[in-house]
Image (cartoon, rainbow, N blue to C red; front, top):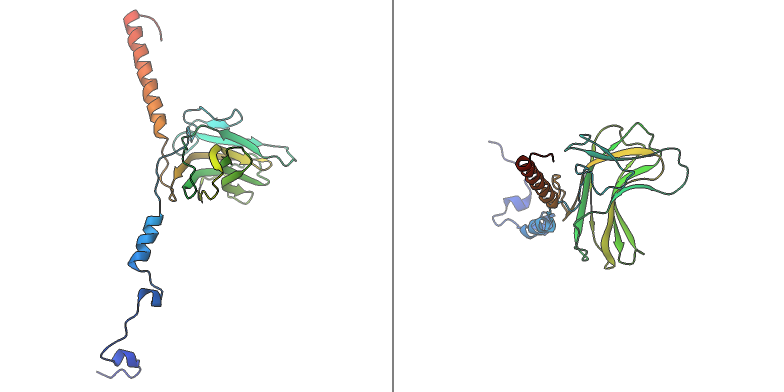
Length: 231
C-alpha cells in the first residue's frame, strides 16, 4: 500500500485539533432547538365560511360557485371597464380573532385562481385587513396575484405577519380585492395563529352551527310526523 504524501500535518498528529460548531459554521443543538421552538403551529381556522360553503357573511358582490373550489364552493369577484384607482372588494367580517398582542403571529393561506374570463390588468389579492381601534392605522396581510400569474389554475399562496404595533386592535375583514379590472377566484382561505400554514379546515363553530341546523331539521321532521303536516 502506498503512503499518502499530501496528508496535512494536523492529520498526522497524535492529538488532533477540535473545533466547535460555531467555528465551522454548523448548527448546535441549541440552534436547532431554538429554530424548532420559533415555529408556532396553530391549525384552527379563525375565519367563518372561508370557502363559501355556508353562503353566509360575504358581501353581495362576492360570487359563490357551488362545487367550484377544492373543498366545496369557491368565492370570486369580477370588475370590468374601470379606469379609476379605488380597489374593489368582496368582504367577510365574520371571524373568531381575539388576540392582538404585539409578537403574536398570524398566517394567511388560500388557493387562488386568476380567471381568463376577464383580463386582470393589475393585481388581485386575498387579504386580511388589521386595524387600530380608531381605524387610523391599517396593516394588510396580502396574498397577491397579477397579470403574469398563470390563468385558470389553482395556485397555493401563504404569508405570515407578526403583530409589531400595539395599536392594532381588530381584524376589519378578510377580502378578495382587485386593483383595477379582472376576475379572481379563491377557496380554502385560512387565517390561523402561528407561523406555519396547516391544511385547510372550516372553523369549529361552523360544525356547531351545522349540528344545530340538523337538530332543528330533525325536530321539525318529527313534529311533522306527529301532526301529519309539512315542514
